[in-house]
Length: 427
Image: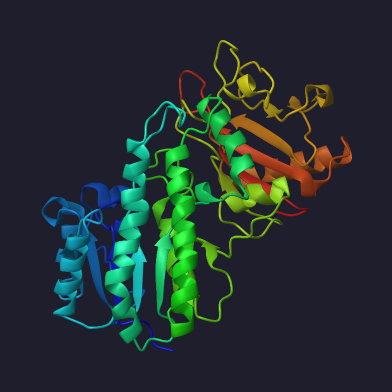
């Protein structure tokens, strides 16, 4: 089956949108692409094949003249990447964008709504006022609605077998995960309220909009689905934990495989996003992962230093999480000290021979390894040795074990949760 011939990405001036366009179109290091943020978004860029070799790609920005990174990308793909001005908060602007695209084509195979903002962080919802909620809704929901109205006719005209309308969502809008995310984020931000409440509400609303659109359009051959891109580190989201390239490669793969026959309406960036009541599976779902046997979790809840999931200071002051009762107070560890930090202080076990300390929760054990300068192979060997030790000497099940590795790169000994692997008897 051939690929799509026309793709529209709405909200492509930076972040996920820019990286998504870059992933879709042909990119070669023989061109002088290493400019400004494009290089930052794709630091290890290699010459790659076009994801959709025959596709014309339309990419929108609120102000194309100021979208210099997008312009640089378009200059390398003349005739294939077309830049369109569109302000998603203005229905007339969306209508004008549709009219401009209609001069080139009457059909679109994929419409990807990626525009989004995050407003109202830092105060609880009763104190912050209504304006941040309005701003989030205008871009994250109303813009998606305006876009669906204007671009659905293009999708209905498409003959492509796997055409779709994709709405970029977030697990932050999940009702099923709300309690778990509340614990993680309030601990990370050191607050007693949900720090991104206004954004969460907008994404919950978007999820419902996506469901309503899907019920209407799927019978007509146009599936509408919501896509969680992962907690991606971008300008808007500095506490992300996966890089843009990893996310967009997964996004493109998911979109290319999605069809009317796909039952799931809400999917993750690299898999179907299964939301369950089990805490360990929720932890995996938060990252958009589906394989609990061996998965990678990076910086859960990390927001640089201030909002990192576990912050330890050199003078031994308490971690941010300890204020929520989730993690005990700990001393800043020396180099290569292992420390498992979870919930119940009464379950603490100290293993002097390995300089390891840990605590157990009802669902899983979290191990933090503080160290410097180890290679990937060294880390894997260390993880395996720790897993064996905890299994044989301490009676822990490897299926309940999370090991994270944190490298000290800060003089004040502040850390996030770091890169972790869930071990199930193998690496």
